[in-house]
Image 1: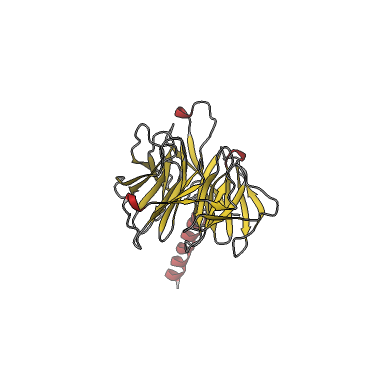
Image 2: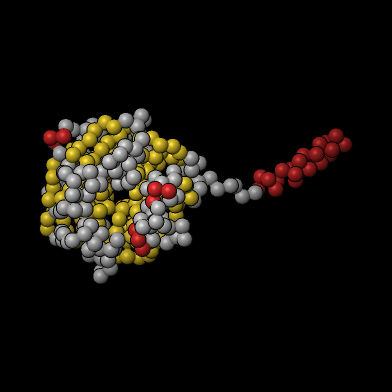
Length: 310
């Protein structure tokens, strides 16, 4: 009995010593702020496999690969003079990253395992702005902020790329309103790829677009607008719209048929510094701070900010 009592006392003492450590709140695993290289000039973001993420550069077309869990990363695709990377999307089937080329008129595709370019599609010449891209089961769609068109790159069931001659140009028709300035910007799609959603930054309107014809139908927002709309993200029946220079993310509850939506809230954060695009991981949104208008962009600091979904 004596030995048992002594043993019990020793065990309880050990428990009391260890309990404060065991019950202490764990350190934050996923950092709120993820720094990017100085002078990187980011714009687009995409989530890859696991906790991998990618960010593209407006400065020289480089692509940065990082880890959401650690906040660490490195350049995957080296930049080149004259190149631009704006919106980007990852295709899990192939491991390819699709990148909109801005004023270069190109859409490029990179293998995220090696960082090598596997395709370059010249959609148009200088004077247009290839802004964003979404990848569906059957195609990748690129927006052009200067012209009322989408570029459709057909994909095979396993994500295999086509020849350049297979690229289709879809004219945005129907309710689409083309005005002076930036027009078609962020783009997303329903999970089955049968409906695209496109935001017009200047008009402040959202459209559901037929992925085969380009016919656009205005989404009724009940009088609300999303001017300065940039990257968008459809999560179930919730649409998130980044409003860049307003430092906001609009939260819109969409109707089942996507014909209408209701602006229900706005996500803001003191860390927002002109966010442009977002990607999702779990219950979090990751926004890229592009810092448009910063005095010396080539020497400025940039980052990605994590915020909770509404």
